[in-house]
Amino acid sequence: MTSKRIAVVENILSANDQLAEENRRRLDDAGVFALNVMASPGAGKTSLIEQTVQRLAGQLRVGVIEGDLATSIDAERAEAAGAVSVQINTGGNCHLEAPMVRDALAQLPLNDLDLLIVENVGNLVCPAGWKLGTHLNVLVASVPEGADKPYKYPGMYNGVDILVVNKIDLLPYVTFDMDFFKRGVEILNPGVTTFPVSCRTGDGLEAWLAWVQDSVAAYRQPS
Amino acid sequence: MTSKRIAVVENILSANDQLAEENRRRLDDAGVFALNVMASPGAGKTSLIEQTVQRLAGQLRVGVIEGDLATSIDAERAEAAGAVSVQINTGGNCHLEAPMVRDALAQLPLNDLDLLIVENVGNLVCPAGWKLGTHLNVLVASVPEGADKPYKYPGMYNGVDILVVNKIDLLPYVTFDMDFFKRGVEILNPGVTTFPVSCRTGDGLEAWLAWVQDSVAAYRQPS
Image (spheres, chains in turn orange, purple):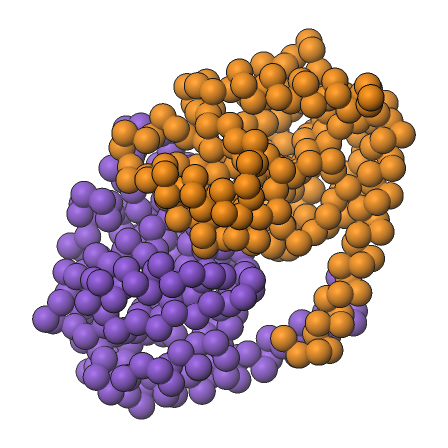
């Protein structure tokens, strides 16, 4: 990149970070714990959100912000699962930015929510660089993507707080070297909390849901 | 985006397009037909390239340019399959640009090649906007990604010349509404040539390989 290009990008990032901090304050004022869910296209972000909303119905009130280039397919799925949802169409942008989330927050009944899940645009590169104001970053990997993804997308794997490995029901039908995958994750993000799940069969979801509930509870009652 | 940001982006794109034209001239001078292969992370770009190189060995001399954020895993796979390959590490950049391809072309024995395959960074958004100088754009979709991807990544589906639908061997094990998928493709890219394949089982690869051979032959002998 030219230095002019770098300077412009840095200015944009800095403005974004300030707005992300404002979003965080807004969430904290309302007592809403927020996750930023990132993944490749088709890894199962929306399925994980659907399962989370459905299975925690009656226990947690969940809001969902759906980020997509186009369509409202995901927001409709989240609503059908029982969430209050807002769709952001980025109009071609490859990741969410803090101002988009700010506008979406304004449309949500934050005081009535316990948990907010932001579904980022499907992309293993660009979303990693943009803070949104959420409390934790969750990466959804998926078995059919192949075991080399940590090595090939290190910025994303390095920067997340939680790793969900979805579609474990497909392990018998694809080539996926779990040891190679885990080694890559361990190099980039030692000790990261990991949940192997299948949103299709429900396998492993209990541990994930327990973590979500515990996290919301811990957020509400800081020691 | 601010107008300043738009102006900078437009200047960069215009400079890129000029270099893409130079790359094209270089390929045409050497008589090398070139494909730009794009996809989500893990859809099977490298597997398709491996299969193509191996199965056309002795018939076409293939060069491969591998674009990745990091590692040389893919270049090693392409070399092992029998291609001459060059790895581009983008250093975090989410797509290939024409200058990167120019530098890679300088490292390839173009006069000894029939076909060049450029494997872009795994990303369904950003690569679509950047010309590289290749002759055709190939998108590799994959069944486990789900059937809604054309609707959600319209810029990519709209801009490609060829669509390969990989991992059809997983159709019995996942939810994939082929009619819904095809309808989305047809809206965005009517009549686009499509190859359903499984790089794992070899299903459908013959039609793809015949298309590659016919395309190289047609390029060599324009009417």
